Image (cartoon, rainbow, N blue to C red; front, side):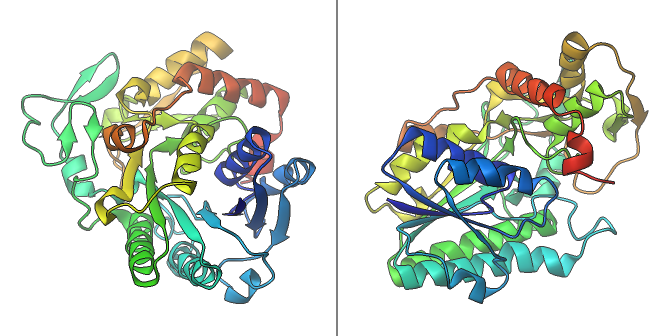
Length: 358
């Protein structure tokens, strides 16, 4: 099978390409990347060694897709993944939209010409901020949890997390809006032109080699910074570090992708699914700090109780739909993910400077 991966030299794209290449000789893998993100160059040599044919190109430029060989499927792993993109005073809102939405449009046109299927890697940040920010919570073991029965009756909230029926009304952040719009366009292209399309809404993705930026790779950033005794801070929510996310290794997506490549026609409602580590992987910053202290030694974390735009106390995905449709479950437990990041951090003392230069 001929597979195109966009953002192929980013953390997620390169992990998927590497896992697909190592697990199956039947795939012909092609990647495209603009190499704009610091650290992406580090993945080029290994992917080429594994037989991935790489192209330097920018999805914002439709002509950059023209030299690509024919494909059966495209996996869209190219995006600016920061929820603060376009509003942090350091990045451009126009560039965010051009990358995340304009790039999707160009890729959809490419798939239409190739008669190829598309798997769009989306995000948990398509879910509405207001009900998540206002979620009744309690603190257990230094981590926020939904406070039941007070939280009972919130549509889309289950004991396992939030499911695909949770609200997606604005605001969801500019980043979330670009991904939600990309989802809608992908499904429309699929219906209009008879293309198989799947939308995989991912929770926080983490693992060794993730670029160390707090707004894009909090687990890698925290562990690398802790190891090097760099300043760390609990921001918002009283400065306690109780905010919680679930955690998923991107290689755990590959068994699902393999099933989607060979999937029969599905109803539109079955083409969108959450893929997260779920409640079993839910981890607060304070719990992450406790793990770091045990593994890497003591380090002080300061507090800034002031809130920050788009921050949420708790966001955990319920992936029951993916389990039902695809018999999918995450395979890599959080301690294994954290240990993998720590080993990589110890082996690459310059990782923060390389992947997230100030």
